Length: 343
Image 1 (tube, rainbow, N blue to C red):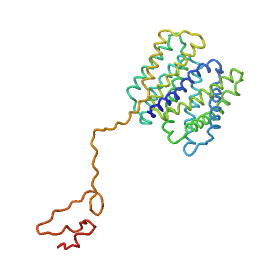
Image 2 (image 1 turned 30 degrees about the horizontal axis):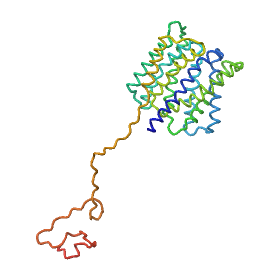
Image 3 (image 1 turned 90 degrees about the vertical axis):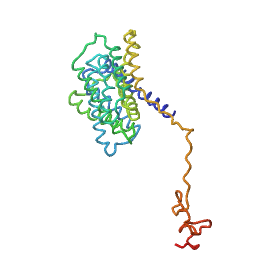
Image 4 (image 1 turned 180 degrees about the horizontal axis):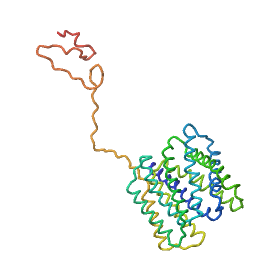
């Protein structure tokens, strides 16, 4: 019972990440400068990493010095730049549809890297969720940019590989600390690249500062701690399917902010996405059953042999033999050999 409750709590915590990321597309597209993807990624990663470092106050140790660099480059530096570019080049609906392939990608990468073979229900959930996302988001009126599609697909592949690699390396390391190290390393990689390619940081108005605060603290620091916590304790297929809540959040956010009405097609797509997420739910841990009808085993009698364990086999008296065999200790502990044993 406790294990099942824990799995439900972990699922709910993991869901924080895609919900925050679903709003991140809108915030990035509406409030952040479109021509500064490197600075946008750097100002997303580094503040988040420094905040988490201030909370956990732990430095990398042993192999985590280079692991933090590798994961920071994949999960933060490269991924954030690609997502920033995709958010500016594509409509949110198209970008979210491409990223809806992530559950299937994560399952396929997790198979060789962490020996998690995809379950049939996970594969069915991924297919169902992808169809639902297409129904929700694709109406045929979206502008499609080839560079944007390529950026979104590259972000999908890089993040899927980086997330499964983080799952492989996560044993014995605090989630908060490892997330802080990745974000800090990723931000430090991005700073010199942003300064060299894009010049000074972008001018920051109040809406821009508030947008960067949301992107860095909520959609990055909080979201990645929740996501990596889920990856550590849940199957990659389950976590990937929870990620389908990302486009659901985008659709519901557009409905709430822009006052858009959900069409029948979108409602059907929403139902399919939620069905896909449900198919990936963690399995319940069965309670151990006790067979009360099985007869209890009789303990093996302790025999009088010198080892004191197991039964002793006493040979019957031979004809004419009046004493017990040599070595047999009767009542009082006296051996038969001292009582006239002819042998």
